[in-house]
Length: 269
Length: 248
Image (cartoon, rainbow over the protein chains, first blue to last red):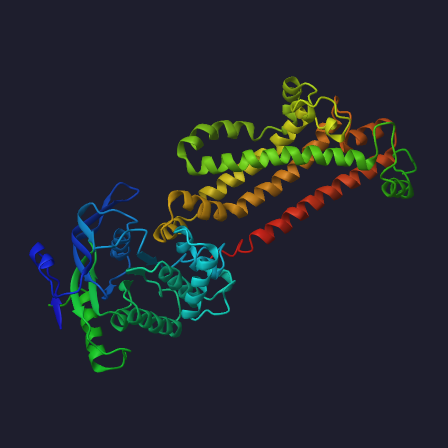
């Protein structure tokens, strides 16, 4: 089931008519940061990645391995030093690529419904319409009745629900998620994972999900990418065919878990 | 304590307070002079708010504006606003608000709004509003800028929907401090030679006439209005920024 991640050639990328359209393609992407002391830190090196429409890709790696950097590059919040990053047809930064962060996911000065409507407001959608659409999404993520609550009046889990609704409001084709459930308790996390899976199954949406939690990566992903540390690069790829909803207690799940954990510690092969 | 010209009986102070319309030495009543002071403060404060907030935002978001203006601001800021009075009188002479707009002498309360006085009030309110706005704008979390950007906000929208609301608590703090200082400064300015109306003027005039009951009544009025202004700003603040101090 596991195989070492392969570097793609241009032929492979262009000659895959049977597959679904490509949403995202990264080739030999590298990124170096300069620390305050002037030392150069290579955050990403030779990252190759192709994501197809309707995939749910989870990216697992240790904290500080460059996962967030990679996500920021894809979101257009930062630029790569080397390599190429191509978005599939119809995808544009600041338009239909949404981003859910771990912290500061909502504007504290806006109510839940107004937070969800933010993206629509930026696109010039009239007030009544955007609030109606936001209210529908709010109900969809299970926050009915909290329309006028401010973020500080919501629990951590509720805030992440609202953040997901906020991202969905702009009708993204690609949803980038940076450890969105990293700060909530376990039972809330399970609920949120189930909700996200449902949303993914119901919509034509591609998700790239970053986590350091192996369980989460397996529960959610149709493909798990294992990130190696310093410089960060994709070291392994695991295809997950387990039926959903996924049960963490099964033998297959446990076997995968062990393999991914071994891969993470760099001891696979 | 047995010197009624220093410590008048409480009854006489109360008598002054319950008769705020009583005329004193042809210089107006407690109420009319209070009104004149408030009018001057209001005008100076509004100008200070407009200038302080816009300049604060400009300095906070444009580096070159900040680096070129900050040294000047830092030198002028610690200066007591009253120190500007000679300069203000020299520039504005005895010009009043109606004169500025070509109305000459209007026989209204606006004739008492001398531009020099307004300028000193303006200086008093300007610096706390400026520095608080500047701190507010520079303190905006980068995460909120990224979030807005990720949701498709254009630079102008980021300004309007992130910078402005995120720095609103600090702007309002600046306004509250600024208004307090404006009220502080007007009393001092009106007590100086050259003034001929206002609650500060009445206070010093009554003192010259050994009318300590009026002095104390005026002090009580000044203090109460200062407290009321502060309370009002607090109410506005908590109404406008319910989320303040509860950032997540």
